[in-house]
Length: 267
Figure 1 (cartoon, rainbow, N blue to C red):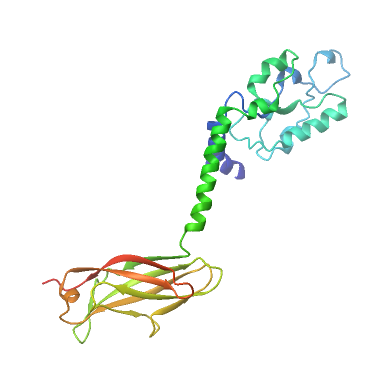
Figure 2 (spheres, rainbow, N blue to C red; figure 1 turned 45 degrees about the vertical axis):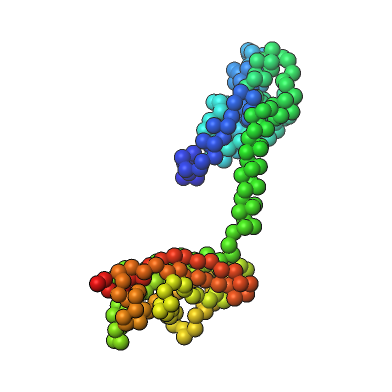
């Protein structure tokens, strides 16, 4: 199941494949050196065999269960465990290390002819890699900036739609709202909930006679809030009246707001 998640759900294989080109250094099997495979090194014709003894050590250590000798594959996560396993086997049988190793496609022809591959820095310092580095650096800088400029409190307001309003015994009109308060600080903070708009609107918090509510550190609290318009006031007689909820952190004075509407009795 883990392998299937890595192949089909994880975005990394797609990102990795999209960013690779012929100069990308990746894990690969040098088939021109390892083929044909064979286990019996003392048997007749053993001199015609390649360096690979078909021990499957590279397959056994692969967390994705793939055979790197079949070529580069979507499931490969480039963990390089196959390199270490193969190097250990090569050391035991007296063969050069690097049968499975890092290589770029552009170096394959040179290695087949016995020439030295290009230096690693020439694969790394290219316009494409520099551009990728710059883009990812900008993304990282943007995330850091967003972390420092974000509000330490967050609020969402959801009007209760059923019913949209309630007529109280004294004739005043009451609307209900679910206000979610998110405290991003590392300690409990006290928030004051208020509103601005029509002067006749009054605010009430469920469960407390005050206009303040305590929210634990790094938690979200759902607070039911009532807004009441006196009988005969403009919000009570209007179908919709816009107003603004304000949430203030009493510790440092930081404020955030959300705009919403008050539903009255339409004339």
